[in-house]
Image (cartoon, rainbow, N blue to C red; front, side, top):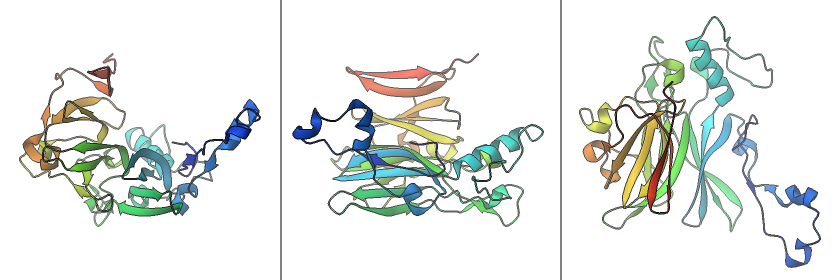
Length: 268
């Protein structure tokens, strides 16, 4: 990830044995090179927010116009203290937050050809409350990726999304995308009346595989939230359930040495 205006991805080819011991420590950064154009050619691809190596390709999920979106969200929450657009002339924020280009993207890198391809762009189909005729992206960022082997043996890539609720308040929950071929991505079912369909959150975050189940951290854009799990996540809907206690504010999770570890946010 980078906090520069555009997303950047870098790779580091291993040094040859003849140069390994001759390269000064201060020059180690020269072993890295920029692997993709800034923002994949679009400065509004702000961060490389998620990455995963799968099927001999590198997959990258972006967030969009993030500096502008953060200011728009803070202005919405604290209009007397935070002004929009930000004063930074290099930010290139749309004067009207409803016009921000927020459709998150998924890209892949093929090492044999050293080429990047955009595989997916979030639809812009969410009506903005109180703004007649205005719509925003379903996902403004793709936060995490992991592969999961499903009960029938299918290996799929799962990608967690973040919506624009921190800017526009009551909008539908984001989605978790799934791909089995590395080219097409489809959302998990979130039908009305099901567990996933009634989940009212801003951000699907960390995805962790543990004991043949997919664990999902979901919550606010600030990070705190609940943990879900499913043994068959491709089914979406009621295949998920909450496993964290109601009063737990999970912030991060990881597997290690046969256990699932969860980091918490202090409620105080």
